[in-house]
Length: 102
Length: 162
Image 1: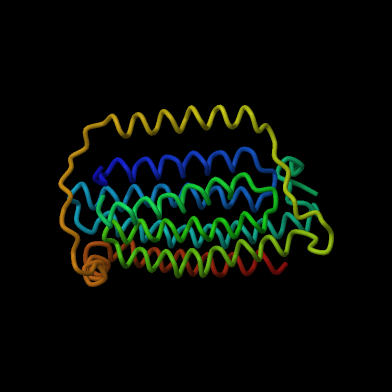
Image 2 (image 1 turned 120 degrees about the vertical axis):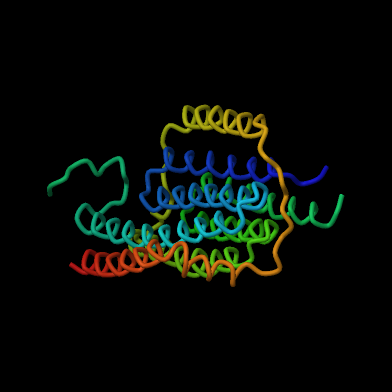
């Protein structure tokens, strides 16, 4: 069976679903971040796959590059926030953090 | 079955299996290392799609940067000396059912659609084409991204140090 666009779409669907699963079942804020990275990777696979099979030239790969840069920025900011939360509440359990003020 | 297909199934298996372990392993450090395997598998899929530059950027930025940041996050927010490195899960069964339904719906919707299928030949190298696009068509987005990264740098540093 020859590899087609559908194979890549199935892989990215599975990655997306697993990312959602990680976000909603884990209590650790760092694990939630890992789920977000899985989802961003799933979206990126779609962009690159459609760029190849949909005859869009390099446009899809360009968007994938922008997504990777934004993911790096998001990870840096999110970890700074997680460190602040840990300093304030002494936990990173997202179920226990329910106040905006100390 | 051609060599292309075999390599595709190899990388696909690495990606999906390690992604499954990322979200199910109890130990968060093991999760981070399985995430490394997932990102590596995705980089392999990019190469199969003819996106060599995106694949190298994935290796450098994700595995070299984001994964190290996540490991730092794990080490700075867990008491390494105690055994409290395990992470708890919540509402496993409803989440599994909901996510299974979502995944099944996505796969059936995506594979049931008639996509335009050109399968354009893979260019020799994409780096020069991407560089030209970046300097011509996407110059505004490129400059804005530079400003954003500067803001992120200052913001993350000032937030993390106080």
